[in-house]
Length: 343
Image 1: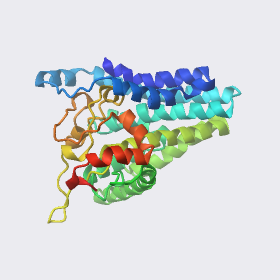
Image 2: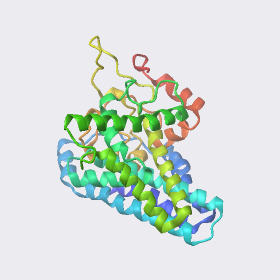
Image 3: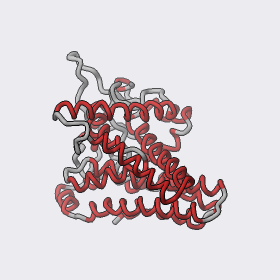
């Protein structure tokens, strides 16, 4: 039941939007001020589960239901926020705060959960994952992440891997443009392999484009120009949140190139790991990222800690705050990167 705490971000965000005024920024303050402070105070838990515990957690469907409910939470938050902003006379200060708070919900409970569901085998779960990517204008993530990032992670061919001494803002440009371009390249190759037509139901990138445009058209129809602008910018906040997490997950780590020209296989050493308990709960164990890349089909509730994985000195919420200040980030992280792995 501890994962119910993952709902605290949308709960705080929506309460702030409801009350307005300075409270419009509650989602921002909760995520990037309160959570990092609490994370520094709370313990680190590096324990793994026994085989019996793993089997019990896999049999417990509540872990899956907790993910599914985020679809209702995300789309409910969008409707509530847009209805509030377009039906009441609000100041620009309040609208900006509400847009940021909504964007954080779209990132934390939208894209993050979509990432987990996108790795599942059930079609129903993958569809839910795609639905959660729409509000952040990032449906192409489904293609690029599964067919690109997991294959090329920690190599120069992966736009989602941050290089040594690359600051967050340069990385944003690299990954936002690079992942979208790569998603089309991957889709083109998949179409050729399976001899699909451009209008095939399996040509995801074509239909993703239609769906993304349709989503914004519907927002404009129901909530007008103001609603459209808020939806656009909250989605941008959502995917910038994702890409900031991408930045800290693989910063400065590289896979060595073998004599054959191929890269060494992905291991637990090629992602930064964090056992800080609060970040683990809030992000559905995303912070045990080393194990996720080692075995991408493992469900979040059984991800494990490996001693060989590079360890972040702080949890993900705190590390994200550090990354906003490049000199501080470099001072903390550069000395922790194994010499043989610096990219």
